[in-house]
Image (tube, rainbow, N blue to C red; front, side, top):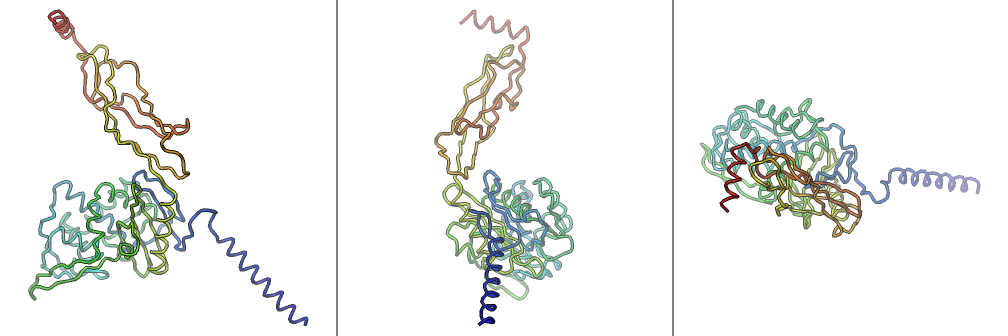
Length: 389
């Protein structure tokens, strides 16, 4: 009987200890439970971070590196340096890339658009290097531009060593930095969604061996599994484990969920889904497009009596507390007059937004035209005009 009681007591203590550890590991009330060691959830239009877990820990990014590669490709397209219809010739070096690939051969040609499909759908390392060489002459030069672009975006904990994400010493980034470059790509170049949401598509290899079809299958299973998925990029290597930058849109809310170093692909997608569901349940967005023209401002001492104004841009406010956004008010804060000279696009004042009396943000009001200071002959001409009216 004593032994039985001792055994029961031991089991009870073990169970209580287990439950205590489980309770300790549980996330704060209301927050999602994420298994991966590093994760971040960001709202895309405002850049608001909704959830993070060791998001500034430097980790190997695997193929989510290609988000920056795609940014540089689209930068080149926007600048007119390349066009979607341009022909890209594959070098021996590009064709030699291991890992995920579409088996491009040396001397093979493909269009820029086909290369974008190979990168965004099938995560092709060979296509990445071929594009890097096509745009900047060498992968090394392309990578230097990747790092410069990363600095511009505030990706302070990122260092790229290659353009495709193969495990290399020093090739590191963070979940937060991945979210920053993901936001840049989808905000500046939303046409990327036209490619990264393709589930399956064939490309044609034309080589010395003849012509053959090759099937591309999207590595991002969320495209099929999650109804609001819009992209963006997966990655996995032996050292990086399983990563994803998952983008999704529901109504007017666009989210970016970054998962890094997940133990397997199921956890990667499960964690991303958990974060996206959490974000959609938590967020509502207020947006004022500011397409109307503010009233003109009176000018003193100028060649014109008034100057038109314009908003610097739209205003966006992300609410996560269930506030009544219909009660948001806007107040224009401007001086009574503007003294000439007035320079176009200089700041005239601001539009202030308030919710329940508290300021939640503002947008600058700019002069929409220049007004020079009036000289003697200007005053003389204005007097003549007034006389003959």
